[in-house]
Length: 291
Image (cartoon, rainbow, N blue to C red; front, side):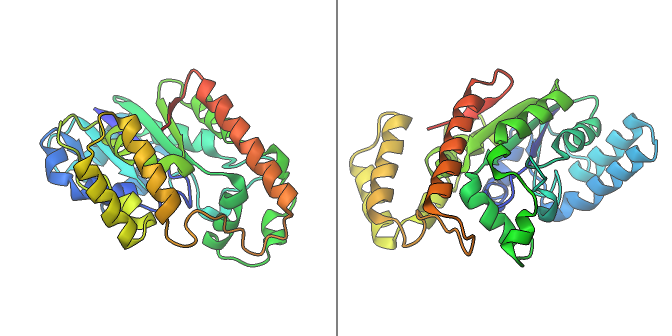
């Protein structure tokens, strides 16, 4: 069986992928793809992690966990999607790194399924917008206290991915930039689910619909109906053009909140992030989803 952990990251997906896959649960189940709800897997997963830590026999833990998650149904792929799998939001930011416990935590998750192939999927986000949003998610308070003594110039997603890969060398690792998500949404849903049907999954346009004005969405739908794109690249270019012209107010601007950062600091973080993405695309142990 293939076990997929969709790790978030925090303040990227916001459970949209899990909800989209759940809308297609019956169609996915026909192909042996199971997507349990968070309320169905949180408790069994936590119990299994505690059992392993207490020294329980790994195979017994795996059998009990699969029984709880699948309820006796047959499956060839299991998708577990929630952004707190690596840590709570208030533990994401370390002194010189994001997700300080990413490696050990990923190893513990993989150890739950020693007899199966494990995959980790994670969306990445520009630290210039990620940190303010994470601060709000973690409960707010003084932003300077939240950053504490973190070295913002040393925060790299490539470091997070490298530590996960080193801790789980047999696992497949898939990543993408959250900023690209509207353009790769159908690809992302297929990557998570490994859905093989020719008919697109329901909800493939749901994300872009949330970013466009109603008029913009209506215009884009009409345009796609009258000018069907011949390739996925053409489709993404069309989405980009309509998003540029008909985006809902505020959806494409950076929301930095009360960070106190200068424009130069934001630009520096953004440039470092873009260079980091280039490095990630070159990492041999990472499958990077890009438009």
